[in-house]
Length: 114
Length: 148
Image 1 (cartoon, rainbow over the protein chains, first blue to last red):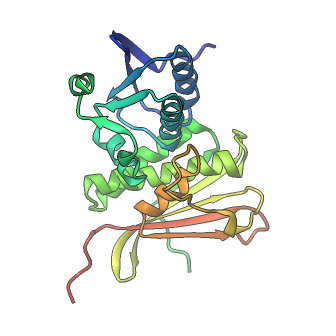
Image 2: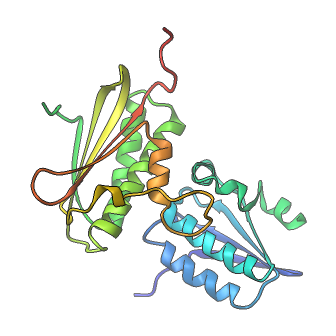
Image 3: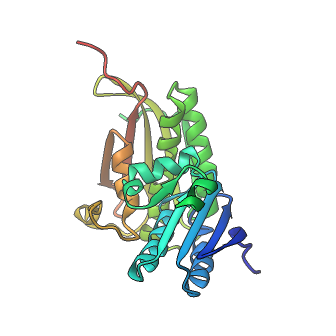
């Protein structure tokens, strides 16, 4: 059975793409997210915005997936921006001090202005 | 002497079972008087501990037993929620369980760090049965110690 997509929506930007992720990102769904992000990043986007507004929970496997995506972008001097973090998602980034590593904005509109 | 747990759960090492335990821990923490954010963090720590058992202890085999016992305890003279997680994985050297340096930005190794950052007590031990690991974690219910 094919896994349901984790990325629920995408919006083209002048220099890249804004995607929305939905649902809990944990051990079960992180591999699917990794696959979907790898396909997107393979296209060489100057800027990728990931909207997490509809993600109520993320565990360390989800965070690890986003670290991989960030590293892929930074290797080629490209940008990855996270936005719309709910409190539980914000908390795991703060606990692991990755809120200092990622570019994180309050919402999608702010992310699009960067 | 072992204290009778308030909640005693046995699950199989399947990722979807973790979500059920996470919800139960969060509800239990709130019922014990923990603040909402601390309850959510405690549930995250238990989630990470169970994920580590599944990934590293059992190598993602989905039919292995995990026991989770939750109790209301006094730890260092303060009220705390205590969670004991036991598995039957091959015994490992306890010194191999390490939190990674946060200076390294890389995927992997975050789970142990998250558990240590959230919980006030983290103790790994071997079970006395020849196999398996026991993780005992506690978090104070009142975040501030009583004044002297």
